[in-house]
Image 1 (cartoon, rainbow, N blue to C red):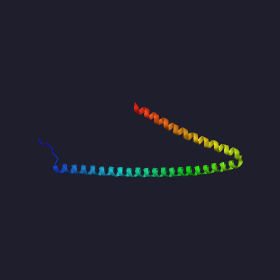
Image 2: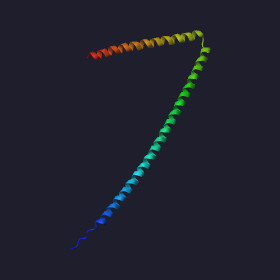
Image 3: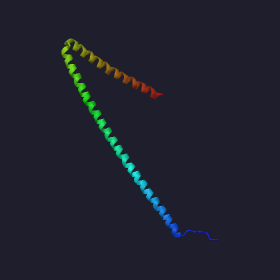
Image 4: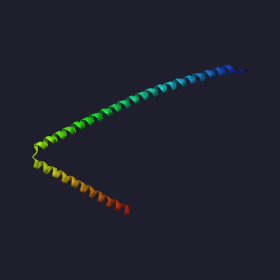
Length: 124
């Protein structure tokens, strides 16, 4: 009985062909992944630049918007000073000063009370 055994040369050639095909497929897949990575990196860079431009634009709008608003507020205050009787203006300024001092006093009192509370908690 004769069993067919392929020749070693034929088997080696077949294996070399398979290895070569696998290497080519691996190289093709690697190149595809590198291309996808480049595309993803480019998209990410574009989005980052757009976000940066958007943030810059928002900051400028906010800055200029506040500047214009602050200027308008100051202009209105100056106009009101001219329209308001001096006695009333002085009375309002005194009230503002009094309220500021009350706020300062209350902030200091709150700080002292907080220290007392912290001391009580630390003793437990």
